[in-house]
Length: 430
Image: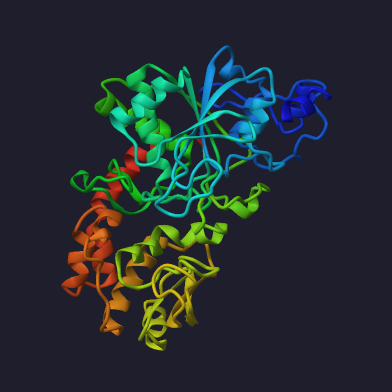
């Protein structure tokens, strides 16, 4: 039905209406827009995502290729059309498969779930499930799909343990093994890109929430991460680097937060409802490793934290740390699902008042330290999930021994400095 509708209008004109300035190739260098650029282009000064720049360049990077796309509901244009629907309707693209990550391609699954192997009802395209798949299993999927070019376009949240960036890594490794090209279409880091924060993963603790040694808050876009992966890790895992091309954004700078981009926010997962969530997530997600609620089942997940028996003393202790850019409010809430479902609990709500100075990981550590001091019921999850989130046993053992926030943060500074030096080589935006 979609194809019959699209045939009544100029496909080129319809798709070009979503485009901005001309895309560049692997380096993402901006070029002047051609004479007679299509009307309906986004206004000057707005951030143009990688997909829009690729379309404006006539899909040159995909020319003559059998294309599969790794994406989810965040893969939308500025006009909130899904890129799979756009490309499927365009004769210039030979789109033959879709690969869905955690939560699925169309986003029907909750945390820790996926949609399985399906056929997309809107396009008829086969949808392959990549969640928790790596190595030979993912190699087999890519071979079965018959694609020769894999495109990645997913909105990240800026934290090492957000699984989409490891879907990116695993797919790059599988593409390298199978000799397929890999194209990354860039999007903003919603937490900004000013710097990297937090501990760097110890490879002994590698899991799907952290495959390789990067910082807990990496401060990179997905295209920058892809370049770092390819330069530092993929060859070791696959025996060779992948043939990588990135299509970068225009108009985005490292200090930009998402609300300044002019782009629509589509929740990249059910518990990431707003860019504010992403801003704090790389710190407060650490509460997944405890018996306290991380706010799932509320309208402010990862901004509301608490448990039964917690009272005003936690907010008072957290405010006494004078952490930069944030204040804490005594809060009471009843999660509708997950921990403490249907029970009223006490805790704190984070209020970030200065995003420039806010350090999400230091804040998360400060909240763990104070929660343990003021609430006698505090406990780590029995599976030591906190070690997987922080990338080692260091944070847990130091807090258990009574270390303060500054002492815990100081312990990872050497590793963080080494990562920052590597990171700088792969940054693409001012």
